[in-house]
Image 1: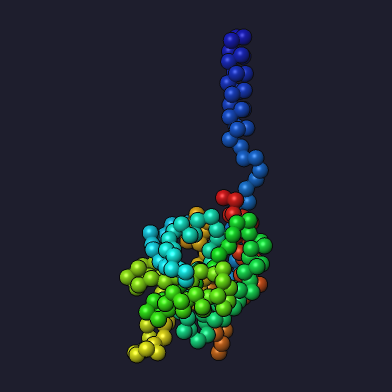
Image 2 (image 1 turned 180 degrees about the vertical axis):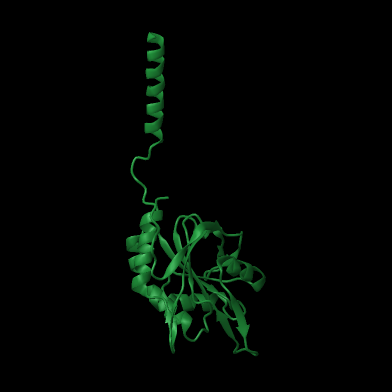
Length: 215
């Protein structure tokens, strides 16, 4: 009988220690986030290998996404409205993003017009808004799979040298693990160009950064 009691105490003691060891030190907030300007992907997804060129001529690969949050969007330097508006808004938002994130935040402008958007043109263009932003591109054979992997679409419209590029106006958020994490879309406004509201975007990103930066 004594052996049985001792065995039970030993078993319970070991089991209790295991339970303590496996219990989280603090509660994890698992409630879904409510975003005003976008949505999270149900499962963050890694990107297929890619190789682009940034505005300094350096190679831009998956490694450039690691260890930082990245807001990525597609456009071109000759864009008459969406791109300059987007970059101006992101330039105004950029210091606030750094302030609310525990890890660096970068903005990546993906040019869908590699024929006209040379390295120097991309450098001059992006420096006008913020020299810390990235302006990347590649020949279409490399660029289109990368853009499609992020969920972006683009197409050349018109003939001659003054063609335009029809492109997405959304932002994709890539996580510090290099995974496609969230998408933010402009809200349509009757008779006006749809835009993503900076105040709503900042609030959404702060929620995401606070919840997931430590994971």
